[in-house]
Image 1 (spheres, helix red, strand yellow):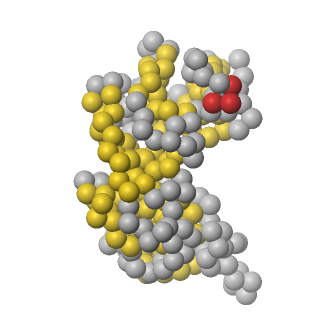
Image 2: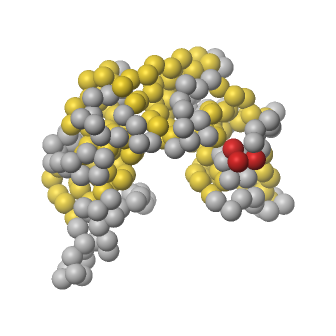
Length: 238
């Protein structure tokens, strides 16, 4: 069997070295030993809702999946999806996890619905998620992206970067340096430094306290500058 889908979302590697690839046709599983694919779909949903985006693999090697506004656990041993309760609305949902590192018991979900100013915190208890909803004070900004590090939460918004503690999301404060830039992506590197991508102002680098130290932009007269000022994704190699 080949891989299914024409639009591919997130890719995760499980503890056995196999790959889980989300697509518009479901959750694809790639078995390294047999060099083959199998695709799992969520029963009872419309064909337009087959989008699956895996976002975490826990200590039992089960795969946590977002599909639309729904959250599911794919039980690998039983080859079936288990639906968890969700209070989030909309399809453009960004989910981060506590812990951030894979292969541990999943404890907390922190989620935002794109282009809103609302943050959702869900504590996992058995087969339920106990959700809290926080309407954040963002000066009219909407959330584009989110990044976690331990208990710290950074929000990339349409008007700069905000920071809060996930144990007290209501105490959200704007970080200095990025001003009212429209933020596209956030990334925290191995030195705990925050990298801030924007839609039209290049790339910012902040220290571990969130204070902006450098800005990188595209410059026609500089051969080692960015190729463009719209940054869509940031990742670190080994």
